[in-house]
Length: 64
Image (cartoon, rainbow, N blue to C red; front, side, top):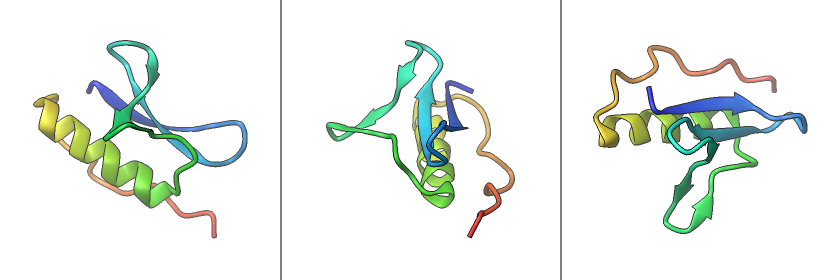
């Protein structure tokens, strides 16, 4: 997979682009500071659009 969801040191989530080793961007927005659900959804959508494998089978567990 090209895009992965990662938990950052602040406890929020980000979508990371493994091809350029930087946080992913969508419509000019850097995909950091996300909830677990946002990170899962955006990672899945980005990988599907890029044709990079299957979507994540499960959403990350919420810490709420």
